Length: 166
Image 1 (tube, one colour):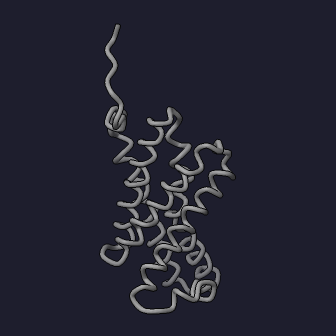
Image 2 (cartoon, rainbow, N blue to C red):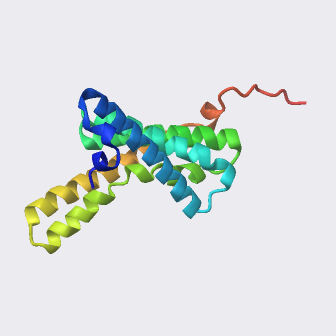
């Protein structure tokens, strides 16, 4: 489905690229909040989840034209993980609360679908291409998460003063 049919202002020139990025970022944030609702995240964390998912998708959208899809996915996953760790420390809750719903916009669901579709329709070259691209995106997500997960938690306590031990 073409987003221009829903939003006619997306059909014109250079402004359309900016408007399309804005609409897709808002859609990613909304989808992230919907998955947070589905996964049982407490209501007070919905804005944080939406911001994390939207920020990850925005970075992916901005980098996709300049880097490969896998590299853009890696950097977006790093951002999602950084923000998830920051909010987890700030809100004193598990990082998975923000990470699971925040990473949803980056998951290559369409790539996996097309790989299966091409395989069923006996278009094996296209199936291999789509499947390999999806596997690269998944590997980029995993590497982005692992790179940030290894950092000490104290790095994410931004703005918190150190308390003196009594």
